[in-house]
Amino acid sequence: MLTMTNNFHVFAAILSKDILLDFRGRDIIFSVPIFGILLILLFNFALDVTPDMVDDLAPGILWVSFAFSGVLTMNRSFVREKEQGGLEGLLISPISRDIIFFGKAASNFLFMILVEFVLLLALAVMLGFLVTSWVLVLTIVLTTIGFATLGTLFSAIAVETRSREVMLPVLFFPLIIPILIGAVEVTSEVIGGTSGAVARWLPLIGIFDALFLIICPWLFSAIIQE
Amino acid sequence: MLDFNSAKRSLFSYVLAGLAIVLMTFNLLLIFIVAPTDAVLGDIQRIFYIHVPIAVMSFLAFFVVCIGSIMYLIRRTSYWDRLAHSAAEVGVVFVTITLLTGVVWARPVWGVWWTWEPRLTTTLILWLIYVAYLMVRSYAPNRSQGSLYAAAIGIVGFVDVPIVYYSVQWWRSIHPAAVVGPLAESGSLEPIMRNILLVSLVAFVLVFVWLLQQKMAIQKASDLLISISHISDRTRV
Image (cartoon, rainbow over the protein chains, first blue to last red):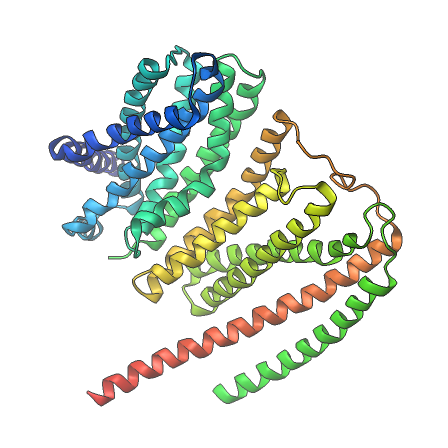
């Protein structure tokens, strides 16, 4: 019981440390949403989005900008630990590595949710994409869990390699294709597209999350070295 | 000990290579002379006897990568790492050939080089995952870290493949296929065609095992060379 509460305290400490760094640092908390808004702007010009096309194009624009901003978010997660030797400190301290993983994944998750909220607002204003749906909220949460779980593992790997900025997307994007497709399909149905997508894709996203929530902490503990 | 090991290995590899050469020659004769010309597709259909076994072998290779990766993370012995690394390299070569032969076949038969059909899409994603696997190995700061990171990707990548396949298939069922060729859904196969395919499969299994064994021997020699150069560096100082 003591270890349970201990683990939770450690988890909360890692999470709050990351949140504090994000808010004190200021750089990333502004640059990632601005990057996302920039993406929406580029999509608007590249696809020449007119109001009657919004329903067709918005799900794709939404999820591609989420995924790209997500990669930026995740890249920062371990770079910061690396620069000042923070990761060594975490690894030396007597904490389970699963807890470190979950702490980092949770901070990535929260940061991505924040960015996604800003991007949804931007989409509503810039493209007139305005949806209030609990299914969409659930999809965003589930998909972001998948993004954050896999992304945290890969950013821990990518940060150690040469050309780390390229390595993370190269590892990340091929593997998240299933939940990216699922999220786009569900979003299409929510705004009035093909029916039956929610019943089919939400479970798939859930299975993906469950699978990688089990595998990724184990792999993280196994591969990370001081 | 060392000499004995390598001598035994080379005898094994000679036998394997001999069998592979004989069976592959026989296989090529079957494919190009014995096999009947397809009534609908013509000679281009013969690529099928090479394309399918190579595709099957590449899946086998990535299965070996996954097993090797799991065992490496549990046992931490260089044997399993060598197995995973070598299987991944052979697998990437096989997937590349699968994609290329598929493209060559698709152009005359489907009229396009490429279509986003589930199997094609999954194969392309597979290729991307294992190219990234090899990239991580060579971009890692040192050998042991590269092995560990690659092991993680080898496991995660293989677990993801079935999900990718199902997701792409579902996605396709919503967006109907633009191209429907005569062999888009392969129906029943003539008995002789099936038998030649089986011979070809066995031939490619031999080629695969031989390549894997060769690659592992090279890897072992290169590991040995590195450790020797470390020792000689130390003694020189």
